Image 1 (cartoon, each protein chain N blue to C red):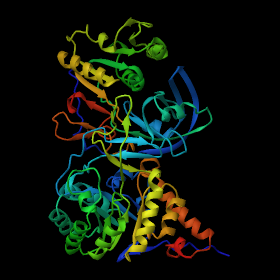
Image 2: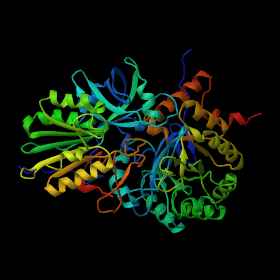
Image 3: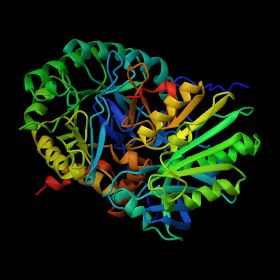
Image 4: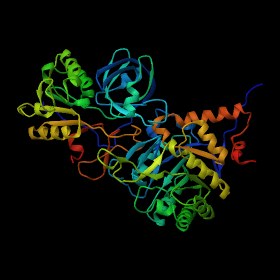
Length: 276
Length: 308
């Protein structure tokens, strides 16, 4: 079966309910020096969440840092649990990383448009670095209607430490997951896209990608060469997550104006946005 | 003794607001974006994203940058344009029992007049807020807001075509804001709202480039509150029409400061991005303050800090 995406025109999506919750932090895991996985109890949000959607988290109660930070939803689990996976890159994520189990997190979501998926063809999940975050949730959902052999996970990271636990999570789901690292400390030395290069195009497939912009651009190129439909999850600076500030603009493919990552995305069909 | 609810009602000309707290333009979308987070009917008024005659694409990204206790934005007045506003956004707002104030912007006096004339036909539009103060576009916008004669001309043009209250939103990026305030009051404005964002910039020291593609942007958030409060104080002494205070209001206490300085009402802006329920919390907090201090009406609070 040929995969297809039937997304509505950007800007015309129906508004879905959004929840603001002061959620208890249940568990904090430090995966490596600067990568953390937090589990919070947010039942309404967890129940409504779809793979590829995101949440906006307030880094603290103070006024500096001021803005919420966007994080894609890493996983949801029974008991109303929701996970985010994040890397400390500035003062917002730094403040968040200090949160202890039992403390509370002001969280808004689920937000945006997630991945679209059907069954009956191959699925390639391509993640680079912290961009792997939403793919675990996606893999879980795909497994409900697909044989594990139809799902291939291709991961890239700077070091093995960043990715080892995540790789195990995919493998524990019975999936074929491969990883490469920039320093060669896990798998071959290379980039996530190197895992795509040898793939043949004889089977119809859908590609789902999340990671740094250069990786996404390369994945889109490799997918187009093979005639595969590609969905990419974009990241931008964002103030509200609610399509009120219009700060998260990304150029449309036809260069005629902008789409907004928070509402039209964060997941886009690769053909909807310009690759500059 | 039974505690009576303080009277929170405020009138700006013939515009009656159930309380003095409004959403600031550009921070609340077209209202529908907040429907699952805020009880919209509780707000004093909803001021929607600025509308121009024709749709605008806005500026290239990056459009925003966080700064200490604030944010810079250079959205560039991206909006759906008048016709799509009326056909796609207005029906939702029609169903909300809260006065709707439409923020309008244009490149010429004629643009503003056409917008005013068309919106005058829409009963739901309780008032207009005339944006003569956006710092992020090349023409129009702030050009009207920094020259008293042009500010006068735009205000006069709008007032001739719109028969309900006209509020003019003022820019802080001028030497003397009272001069502009006096010009628009003389032209017939029913109220002034201030301040719009403060022109600023930020540089990324890693890429060694400005953080905004537009280079300059408007600073908003708690960082600008003292500037806004000072200007409200000055303008409240300079004009007889009501002043609406805007700038970094995050808490009920911030809003009360503006009212004590002489504001009749306030607008909550950037805080909506961080705390979507801020407007409702500020309304409740002001009412609690009045009750706690034995004040019967919000009107007793206006300008109280000015009395010697």
